[in-house]
Structure formats: structure tokens, C-alpha cells
Image (cartoon, rainbow, N blue to C red; front, side, top):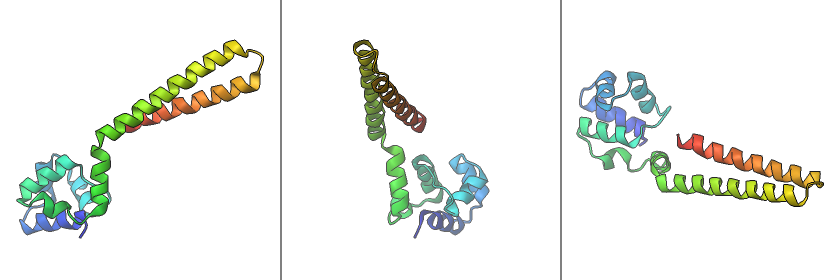
Length: 135
């Protein structure tokens, strides 16, 4: 059974409305509806709050739903996210240093400089993407 069905069954089994659940989880009623209809997934803090509110174990709510487990793993894996951000920043610094060295050594080779500049822009875009994703 998927997380949305489990959340809805736990809520209705205890006689709570979506408004009750929303208040307990600190979200809107529409958010509860989206979770129950599997239009979006709750974060781990909300799942814990609802688990407590419904008096249902986390195992009961989460086990068996591979998609939800993947979502939680991805959203809570801070170490992996930080490693990607550091790698993107390091790559950007290396490319910028290479661009500065090449512009001094080969000032007449425009094609090489344009290529290095393009690589630098790609590195900056990757870094910006990782920063935005982290926020």
C-alpha cells in the first residue's frame, strides 16, 4: 500500500478530518489532501508528527512504499548533497584558474580561450544548480 492510502486510512480510522491532521502536522488541509492523493510526499518531520497524532508506528506508515523511502532518503541525505556542492565549487575554481593561466600564456589563441570560458560557464552553472537545489 502506498503512503497516501496509509495516511488516509490512519486518519479516517481515528475519526480525524483533514483539517485536524493539517493542524497536527503544521501544514494546510490542501497539503494533507495532496499527500493522501499522492500528488506530493510529506517530509520526514511531518510523517513523524502524523505518526504520533494517529498513534501509528512509523514502520506501519513507511514500510513497503519504495517511492516514499527514496524520496525521504534523497531529501535527508545531507552528506551527499554537501559533497556534490563541494565538488562543483572545486571544479569551478579549477576551471577559472585554468582560464586565467591560459589567457596569460596563450593570449592570441582565441578558440582555446573561448573553449575554456565556455567550460567555466558550465562549471558556474553546475555550482549554481547545486546551490539552488540545496536551498
